Image (cartoon, rainbow, N blue to C red; front, side):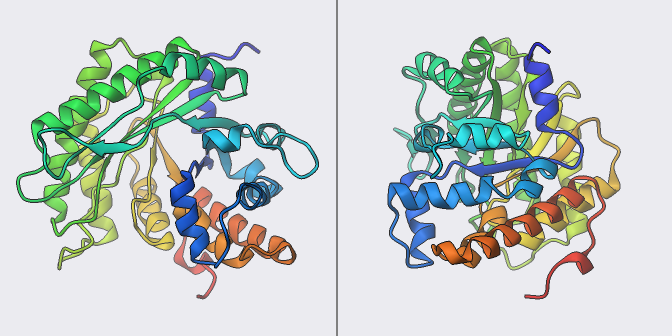
Length: 339
């Protein structure tokens, strides 16, 4: 069967499946390995990711795609199989992070703009040859006094749209990720306001750059209060406000919305996704594209030791299953293992 942008995007949001974000930069994965007192070497990073990708049941039944880092897409497993082939053998789709990170935005104190457009056309062609069929670009929108500014939102969504157009030219499905951070003290209504403004600007720029929405996946934040806000919203309120904002801003042509966890606890990220899918009444599939919320438990269980590989895989399978149920609105808190 001939692959099309539309068929790949639909496979990425297949019922009960979501995306494993395994695209941590070298700096980020070092911080995670520090929590288990493991040195972040190339082999250690390979061994950890190989453990996840070899969790057959999770990969086959719960994970539609895996976002990789540049190092990882080039690595081979201990038996010589490329990690890309391991992912494909499980029936999952390899993807690649292509942005160069969020950097301070000139003239905008406290705000960031994501870089990485230079040379992207050539990098995408190479990544396609290496097996990637989707890509990811993350924009970061912070909320604080006087920010975000219109200039910051506009710069970030313009970059997202240019990236998305280049991806589709290369027959790679773009995941567009405009993340409104939950680090501040803002309430849920302020998050809703900024998320709506960001999404309106994003889809305007995607249209201007002739990006085919049917071959695009959206990876946004949920509408949620900042971590420092004294009043935290209920799961029902998060679901209500998130769905309301997205109905006002996201065209029905988008095949699916895969949420980032954004600092939520493992169970909160699952519960919030489940509540939205229980409510229903929206035109897109809603699933997950979690990094830490899928990996924190298996990383801790594995601990960098070969003898703990089975324990790490069991922990990954559990979280993958929980989020698979949530993607179908069938998760229940009673399914969670006691802490």
